[in-house]
Image (tube, rainbow, N blue to C red; front, side, top):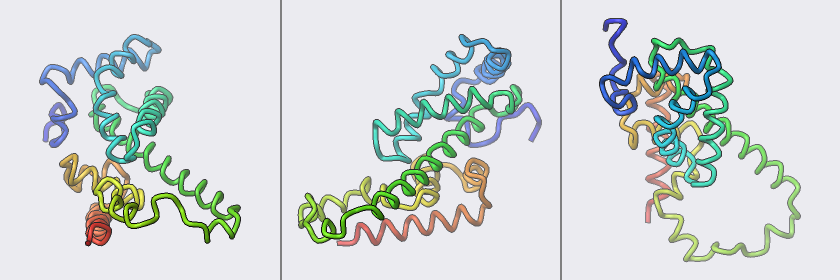
Length: 196
């Protein structure tokens, strides 16, 4: 592949053919402190990043917060990306890492709260824990919410976003084999959760 060719698989993220040089100009300007250039970057990519965050988090308000956190991190780390490199791929990687980090933090908070919970509360019936709650849990979105963060990320990126394992490995910072293993794990867990 020539240095000026885009990476395969990111055509959906990149948009029109002429936008690559436009992205590079905006990135250079934003790196120099131009807020208007950064706003143009945000305007171009925030919907796609929102879609990714929504599918990975399963929650609209959380996805909105994750988009904001993603662009805050992008602004803070913009000096690390070269303008001529594949900016959309780097942006997606930042978003994936923000979502995974948020999921890890949420699980730590949940464990802390559970450890402080009154033992008698465990014996009380919870709302939605009856047959209707069980039927609702068969929904794919709910089943996806219960996936471990890495398995969910790989499932969303591969089966929903249509990314290849090589791209997923690059985005999430894992080996290609790990990506394949996580996808297998996610599909197995979803089949178990959706089994009647």
